[in-house]
Length: 281
Image (cartoon, rainbow, N blue to C red; front, side, top):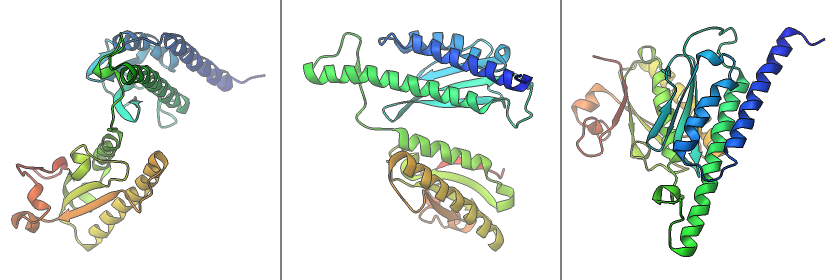
């Protein structure tokens, strides 16, 4: 006899499969515009989640956004990027508006995170196929297709690399224990900040610190751990292998007073460092 826990998980699995079935049915029309696809997706997406009645959705895609009436960002939220031909074109956020059950460390099942990733991957592939057809038509005829415009053809360059690196840098700055490590401010510089990073580019971090020797060793070890893990992640994504993905630049109060080579970038008129986090008033 199937116990209650197994039965409940099977019911949740059924909801996820029904959501994917509805998505497949929706994507059977190969000419949907975002304004036609996303409001319909937003209608049935909450049905795939455990706590449907408190599940809210927000979808952003190429400068436009759609959200359910009661959507707001909460501590209980999933997010997945929509990538079209290695360009991050948008994202889907799924949020619970209240806490019901977080006994496993999250209100979301791992399968629910996988569901959202599957949905964004299929949507990205859908628009890739649509734009591929438009691009081939444009190249063969020199004319735009009947449902095409410049936004509906493939881009020659990818922005995935710098966007992914920028988000990683933001997340690192959020997680860093600045007080324990003696960090006063964290900045982003270089190709990631300038939105030109490629598959082999570093993430250039500029850190203003007042570390003692022990704090400095801990800070460098913390950054090095991230650097090695991100290098492996980047290798899995792109095939480019590097010794590390973070290029760390450390500056002190004295460097700023003397306007050293990296310190001068703080507040500069041309190519200024981008502040990620500041811990002092």
